[in-house]
Length: 117
Image (cartoon, rainbow, N blue to C red; front, top):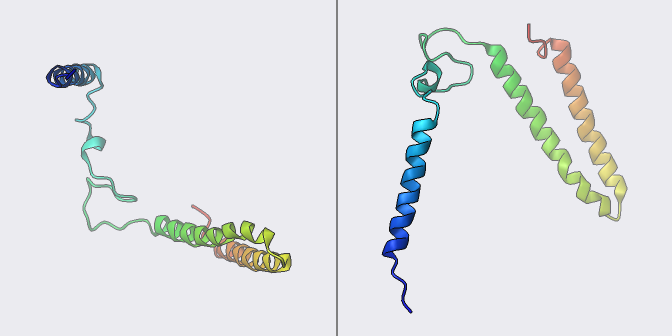
């Protein structure tokens, strides 16, 4: 018994075409809005001049986030060291990394980098 694929293919094309037309006709037509037509760049307004000064505070917060994110990523594998024969190594390593994190946080706080004024 050989089944012809032509009716199955035509049925799937018909159903997908009907669903596509239905979605286009009933959906919101927000493609003509200004925000949808503009390219997205963090911290920049694409409708202004390209040479206008930008907020350094935005980039500073991004850099701080990346630094703390990398340091926290260094803390994640320490859970594996719980099963090591010497748990003192895990505790010592965790204390060093946490000291670096807390010292960096206090340093950024003291410099006023965390204030968004």
